[in-house]
Image 1 (cartoon, rainbow, N blue to C red):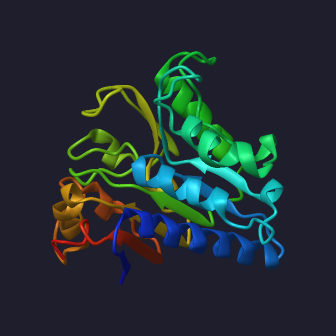
Image 2 (tube, rainbow, N blue to C red):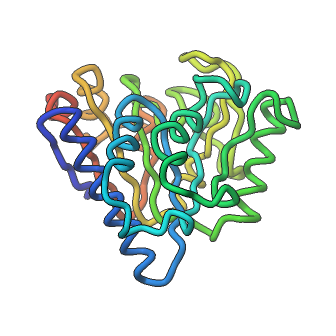
Length: 239
C-alpha cells in the first residue's frame, strides 16, 4: 500500500521532500553504505533540489553519494533541456560531490551519437558500476500518467530484458530520450513520486486506483515494496 503525503502547496512540498531526502541519505550513510539514488527532472524536482541545497548539509557526506538518472532528453550536453544540467545548477555544483559518482546519461554530442547505442551504453554503466539496486528512485509523473520517459501505449513499457531504452518519438519534446525500464526502476526498496499541480490530479487518481492498466497509466508499473507519493493539495484534488 502506497503512502500518501500531501502538502499545502508546491513550495511546502519541495521543503518536505528536501528534508526527507537529506534524512534518508544520512541514515544510509550512518549504516555504513554509500547511498545510490536515481534522480528525476521537472519543475517540482528542480524546486526540491534547490531546497536541498539550502539545508544544512553536515548530516550528509555528498562525496559519498552515487547519483543516477531515471531518464534524460537526448540533446547536447550543454542544452538547458537536459535534466542533469538543472540538477547540476540547483544542487550538485554547490554541495561538493565526487564527479566520479555522478552518472549522467549520454548526450547527443557524446560518442556514441545514436540514441539506441547511448541507451545501451548507460545500461552497461548501471550494470558495471551500480550496486545491484538503487536505495531510492525519485519519479515525476506527467498529466498522461507517464513516468521517466515511459509513455502510455509505447512499446518501451513492455521491455523486460534491458536496463535502459531509447525513445525516438516522445509525445513531449524533444522527441529523442533515454529512459530506464521498469525492471531497472523497480530495482529499489523505495520510490518517491513527486507531483504537483491540478493538471496532474486525474493521473494521480488513476495511478492510485484499485484497478487500471500500466498501458494507460505507466506510473502503475512502479511496484517496489515502499512507495511514497509526495503531492501538493492541487495534485491530490481527485483522490
